[in-house]
Length: 340
Length: 188
Image (cartoon, rainbow over all chains, first blue to last red; front, side, top):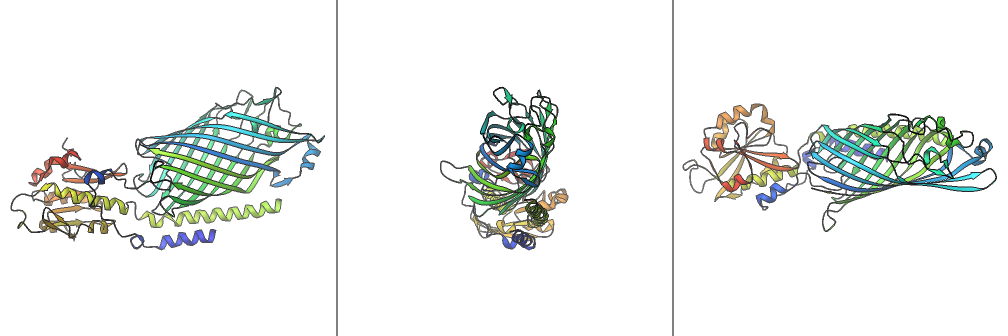
């Protein structure tokens, strides 16, 4: 696949742009009003991360993550080994997130967005005595707000652009998810409990047939929360490419590297000797995921303007403090609609 | 699992390197063309209709059946898209396109399309044709405000039309009020 990717990139680099252009259309048959109303870059399956003035996007995103094997660093640790050290081992965890997204562009060079997550998690436990238990946590997560500012490149044209990301999350998610009055693991809490900054930089490229880009995004915790800890800062670097097979369909591929520092401080109600996921010093990690996706744009009919995408992936590298659960696979479904 | 992760780590690093190389190579083709073919298809269509609403002064066209010459000055990224106008009929006259290398050659034309590449010498070009019945058409911000007659500006993902009525008057061109209604008119 990589060889193919490099092959096609060189092909494109060497290609004569004029030679690859299709024959121009004669649009003189359209009225002047129609021509002035026509979009220069018609919306197609190649999604845009920012919008032009007065465009509004509403979206829904569903994310599912399945966690399974216990890891300590990069080493897989058996359940028996964990049980030899702790009275409990986690045998699996699922994380589901329903996210409502709203974007608005006050100008061609700025887009603001709000994301409202609803989380639903479950974690399976196996105790030394052989008994099992599954804990659940669900509710509103941390709502985030983000501004995206085009700092280089022209958003009206195909080509390359640089977008500055500046945002924050508000501590709307609970950090008191409990069972019988005892707090659940840090990973089962719905929020960070703190205001967090979301700085980032996004590189976007788009040609007639391709869209590509890369993004670096940080999550910087500003303070300790009411339960006396602060989650570790997070860093995310992703790079992607999408090919437009037709105006309405295009596959995509993405690498997503994600690192997070350990929890500072500690929830005093969680005894790190009872459960590895109670140990704040071990909740760090890094992971590289490879994800493949399919993307659809509906150009006509009553659902005109809707985008639908499905992306799934697996980690190709995981290194986490532990023993704690690593990710087995993840999937995202997104639906959004843009209008003026 | 450790060995598998080591292999995956090496594979992941290689993949990332390849992706960086891919990202650096890929934009080469696109870098050269920030404008799009469709933008120039639209500009050609708009220009065609504009010519339906412009009247040249009596005597500036040799005869009733003569051609309307459109001079193209500068480097137009998708000049082929404008070539669709060649041979079309407007107000009973045949459109003829020709590439110019110097503003002085525009004196034989009724329309002068000034490409964005000529922005550094707009003032010189406009001054050279100002007193002649030549419809100057530009495509960058400020063209109509600075003495050009019609500007076809790509903004907010659409073609926006700007017209300098005063400059049209100086060139003795009459522009229909119907066209002015669809344009941003200078001076305001």
